[in-house]
Length: 152
Image (cartoon, rainbow, N blue to C red; front, side, top):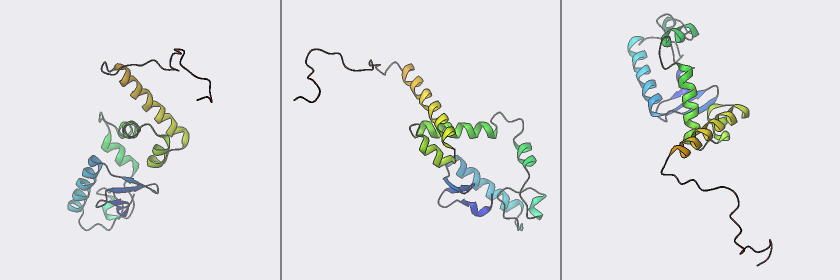
């Protein structure tokens, strides 16, 4: 990821060719990192967003090992954050697989799986809430006032 993949002013980030909005937490983290990067390596010519002491004097990206070490032994791993973020998006936007596919670049199978998980969580939450009345599902009972289809 390059520096020009982050549009701080418009709160957007481009990942794998997909433009995504920056939520408040990520926006703050990016601003903090850019401030740290500017103070730590003010003269670097490296255009990668993530750099290290070694890569600050080169032009390549920080290695995968560096990012793995930076997050080792943390309770909240990057993988957990990724999954939580995707599920939270599904919960927030009504478990819409098309929305998830567009936001995260998922294939349809993955988007449907996340949407199904979100629906199950939302349904369980509704069922657990004593304030929600649970109406029976299905057709209304026939009380003899129904007319044949197509009649007035």
